[in-house]
Image (cartoon, rainbow, N blue to C red; front, top):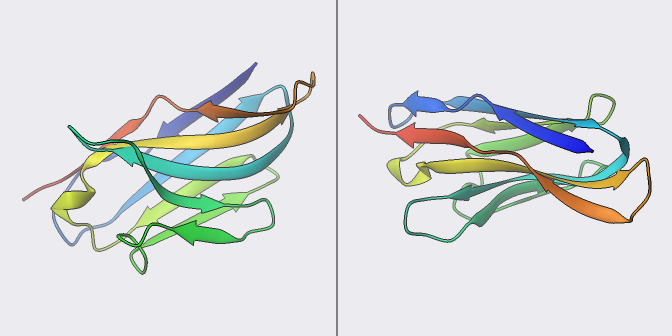
Length: 121
């Protein structure tokens, strides 16, 4: 069993910053990519940022230059530093980890429960 838990969401004014953290735990052999997605009301879930085990990153165009993703392979954690936040960044943010479990079964995606980020004055 693998668990993914996010933390760090909240309410922030436009132009402000937030830091989201995510930890994966359980029967983990190794984690491939880790990433953050978000879903705003009435919209589909979209990729925000992803990072490979080797540290290569990819960002949605809408967040490039403002958000930074990083990970700690030893701790199975991923962090999203969000700066210069805009009202359109308001959404539920979900952490994703693509995991090879200790018990086998191939590469499987695991998701956290989501954390709300609200950008408003």
